[in-house]
Image (cartoon, rainbow, N blue to C red; front, top):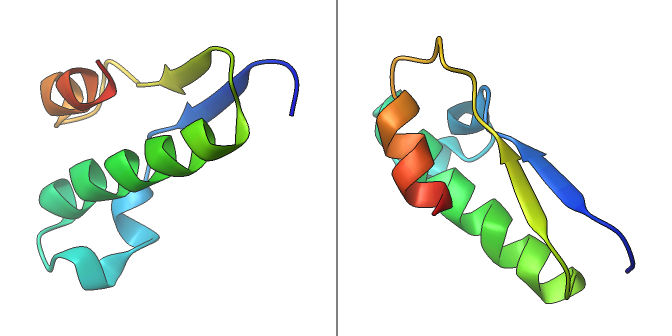
Length: 65
């Protein structure tokens, strides 16, 4: 696939509830999974959109990096 793939980090903890009962922990684990999936499909840049207003902003940025 060509181009840039952008992952939205908002509400990711709702996608894979079986990762964790803790929403914030599930959000980080789900972001890792979405980045892994994107890397399988894209050779180029992967972007992650992280809202500053999120309560787990710092964790999501660290996970993205």
